[in-house]
Length: 427
Image (cartoon, helix red, strand yellow):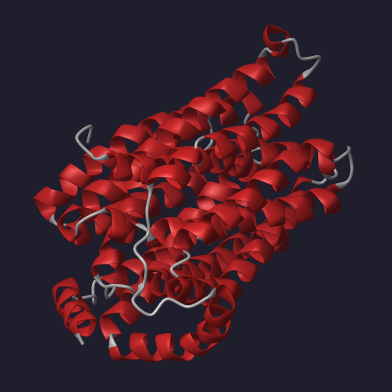
């Protein structure tokens, strides 16, 4: 991996940069801090539902705008411009969490949603640059490298943030609450700093029929209908997107909601346990994402994704019966083994199916379905938790998404899909 050129390293460093948001904010401190500081700490089920709604709203917005943004970016050769724009939105809103006072859960939800929109929208254009920075025979390698670097970077900053939280006096901070608020600011600074290599050293080839931004906006809306038509003609992409829609929903829901669920009285894990488990996932996922690519070369990328889905399904099922710290850490380790692999290989599988010069358009739909899926999971888990009064049943409800996703993925013929994409691009 150290032989990658400057362009690949610079592209991958955006994963290092923005993964701090997904670790420290989404998976780590925001769920804990939301329930204990911004929401009502005496009503855990209600705050779980509120957080699920917040994640779902952000995902709905992204799902609605991502295909349009993708089409516009292709027409104007503006993938990198859109990436930087939405990264800026995410950075500013993440830093803005510092200013929200105790009990102001509505404002916290709004700022979190806006930061999530910046994060998720930026990823549309980050993903769409993958087929540009990597040759087709290197897609698995580069995609896995990006995820691996992201887990390492996000994990390192999260480790610093955890030390700030546990030992605020080491950093001259008055208390743990202030340490968490400062952590949100450090994420914004980290995200901004390590986006610079992407800004400087990743170049985007100009489209032959490049349009101005205004022309691209008009053309982008027209392009949506065309994209639907393309996907209908390229049925392999349609089959994969539906399968992905289901199983990645389960993955995203666990990332966003696991800490909130584990902190409930029903499980009763201490904050220190939750933080330690998150750190474990990050530092296991770093080498696992890279080595899982080597495993995929032995058994095939599609089969490796199947196994990762199975690993997640097993962790979800066992999560219902989880009762002590040993179980909790064992499940965290299991998730760490598969998390980077399933994300990286899904992205590279999809990249193989996309015609040239249509990357952002098709990745717009990829992210649209991923985010629509992210609407279902947190909402389902939150609703089942409230309806049954049990977080365990909320977790168990996610299992069906992995099962259905695996069944549909089995029907996807990627060899056929690559041939169709090549011929489509030639025409």
